[in-house]
Image (cartoon, rainbow over all chains, first blue to last red; front, top):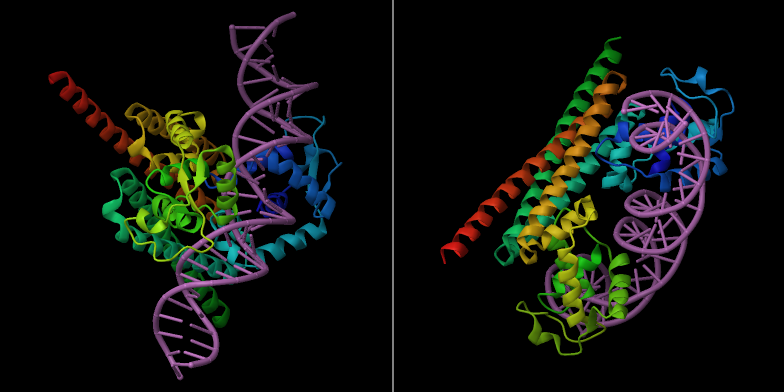
Length: 191
Length: 191
DNA sequence: ACTGCGATGTATCACTCCGATACATCGCAG
DNA sequence: CTGCGATGTATCGGAGTGATACATCGCAGT
């Protein structure tokens, strides 16, 4: 959900719509690319909800990177206290939706700000979901393989490989999480 | 677009909503998975448009695989002549939207029924689009690499690899198309 | 024989997001 | 000094999702 992404980005520094979108692209990369058509309405909605507020303070001071432009029609938003709360809240709840394709990417992008336990839960949830999907496709594929033309077959198999790759990627990440986790535990117990 | 997929599937045999959805999953695999929430309304819309019609003829005769159930509330749809036209029409137009993520998968699933030239055009269009995207991400990544936390970085790089894999896949497919194309030409000229 | 559960089947609704489009200004290259 | 590409805000129609509701069928377990 866009809301989470906006909250996360504003956590760093106040931003206006256009720049938010740039950051969105830079942060989510090839996974997701929200359009202005959803960004601006979302910004309004979030402002109405009180998660964010217009920042009238001059933009120059704010960013480490120079904002480059003066003050025109730009509407700069900043996070409110409620917004910060909301962000933490959203990051903490690893509901089933967190392993859906769209949600996962966004949540993962803010893993650095997420509780280690939640991280593992999400990673594992996603992996389980993908494995489920994979088995479903595999099953239906073995059932209908000979009835499919070569293109459909290609599509299936490429898809299957992609899912497979992501599963492996997730497994690596989970493994890494586990390692740093035990490491963390050892340090705190030997302290 | 769901419309295209429905047209394509009904091209084989008349089907009712539920079964259509099963076939949809079997055909599109892990690429796309339309929900009933869009399927049923689409079916209605298409019926109103005249592309499909309710098939009152008994369902038993119809499918190679036994339909298993009698006639209850099931609504079986079949393709109309206009629907067939529409299908051909949709397959022929390789507009820019054909290389968008969602469209591409659906269109590719019916490549067997698509004109060879259009096939190559779509494949190349998609590849170009992906390469564009990849370069964009790469550029923004090299610009902001050190500012990103390890998770965001992981995400970016995994995404980049995925795109890379698909580009390679597409290249193979294009190569294959080219081969069968020249082969086809040789045959027809030596005939 | 009964029970209940999972698969089959149709349908709606609120919501999110996309893509196209419109419009205005800035900074800079030719 | 002219025009073009990047910056910037905004709306609108349409497509698809996820949740939910509801009903029936066939079968497995007791």
